[in-house]
Image 1 (cartoon, rainbow, N blue to C red):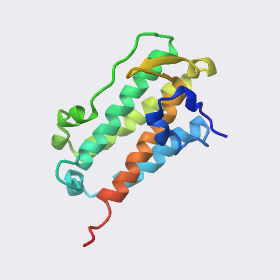
Image 2: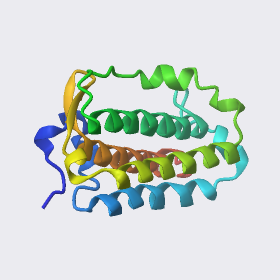
Image 3: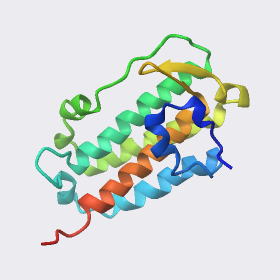
Length: 174
């Protein structure tokens, strides 16, 4: 049985949520950390500037995208948990990546920031009551509820870990 109500999550995000739907919230949050940190910690520094194709994000940009997205989703969850009914705007992930200046960052600084954001999100969701997790708001012109946002956050990272392993870390084949 799913731990989320798909009727309260925009359809676009269902692909993320499916990756963690059978986990309770604590385990789902832990799964994203367990999936991404070991992979990133094993990368040599020079690999962080690699993009698998022209016009695609580097690993640094991908990691900063994950950080940015988690912050934005956590902010949405906070607002909605407090019953703020103000509709929240979408964000342009490509514009964020373009303007992130990720290339000037060191891998260690990105890892430190990622761990800090993961910790912050974990603490935020641990503090929500059942009632707060059930609160709903509008983001990107779509209704979504707080518990659903948590599962989106987790599945989003797992989605990008899959891309990282498939497209960035596999040797090129002829």
